[in-house]
Length: 426
Image (cartoon, rainbow, N blue to C red):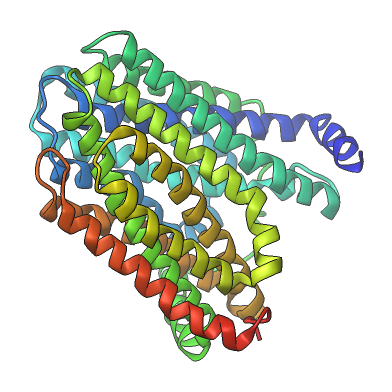
């Protein structure tokens, strides 16, 4: 009841509602654009998608988040954040419109990818700007905690809804890729216009605060990441958790590319049927992610974080060969559900380990490194899959490699889990 009351108080704040509306429209546009990009690369009738093309699309979607992430704060502390939201979304609206024009013009792939990359790169500044602005639109720590709970969750739901809308439009007819991208452009424009409801100085930063020179700040960021790596080297417990998470994330990335190729070439006779199967797979995997949020707290309490990570890895080692080697939709959907649960369960447990065992002074830098690892390894997995997968996505060798990696993680963590019992965070 207290949470409901606090949420009602929060939603009465005009500036918070405006900032939340900017996030919802912006992330809905992200969902539309990302699905539009993926379906254009994989399911357009005029394109013969390859694992390499899928790996390129994943790099465009994920690498800007990772490579720009640690440095965005340096600029956000110098620019008016409301202007970042306004001009960032305006820029993305223009760039998304240009990407739609390139689709219609059937330009070379590298030019299309460059345009799409520019859209996703700007996104990092917008989302970071929204997060940095939250303390300026709420009153007190209690409201800030609630705002930090509501805003990202609502944004994720908006992105999911946007992706679902893009899937629906794409299934409604062929040759509509450019229209779907234009829909994302329109949503970016709406987000920019919504930002105008806030005063230019509302979201900060305070111009009276002296900031170091931009190059000095950038060098300081690099030094901070290096110091974070040194701190991580001295702390075996968080390093072990991050290593396990990296390997499991690699496995999930390789399996994602496999399923994309199976949906495109092996499980359906038409592009529309393949796209529908992909949509079902994404939903099933999402259910697994949601289930992990419910199960993991109980499992960590019973088994410890490392014990639960070991179980998640063991689940993958068992499910991938027993269900994946059929290369059939029904077993793969079951695997998608359980691997969604195990992958997200691993991430939640890793978050807990890092938060509990890293010094507070280094926590931000460690999580910046974590963010880079999380996305770069997923792109790396797509690149490895591109080298190993045949056009139809049926690679026994790749599934064996993934199974072995899962088994290595489960075996490596089982022994320290038994030694530490239920307290592996000491």
